[in-house]
Length: 181
Image 1 (cartoon, one colour):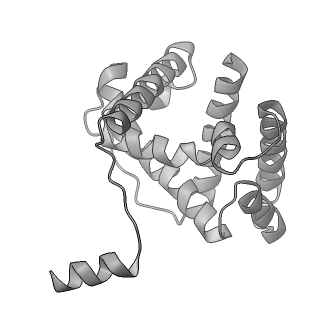
Image 2 (spheres, helix red, strand yellow; image 1 turned 45 degrees about the vertical axis):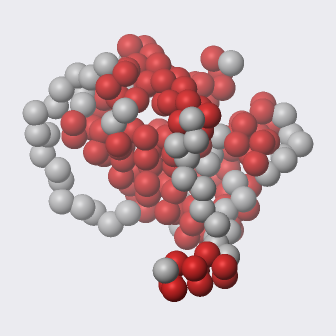
């Protein structure tokens, strides 16, 4: 289990680095009074929630549950690591980008880049507000991240059980009713 968390953290960092490389240069954001946060505070932070929502798309368990991928978690992690290595060596190679998009069941490479960009953007926001940049690669920072992620998952489950999750349907009936009401 711990290996999976380490792999997910490594994957997140690599996606972050790939996302930074793919994005245009942005004006450097100045550190505006960074503060240390608790796992509970971090788990309720909007940037952290958006980060985890995007990261969930790359989770091996997500592939197994949503897309009914029959491979084991270890096989998915190994394939993911292999794709990340290929992509880091040849970031401009469309074939590797397409292979990664297909592996994660994205509809296109652009959708893959969108999720990767969300991860990068929200990590940058967190780095600006919290001292995670220096702490993330230490055991304490990793523990803070995983404790906050655990709390994030608990909040998601509780909100789903309480019916707080907004369910959307795209149907002609809803569009017509909304239009005429």
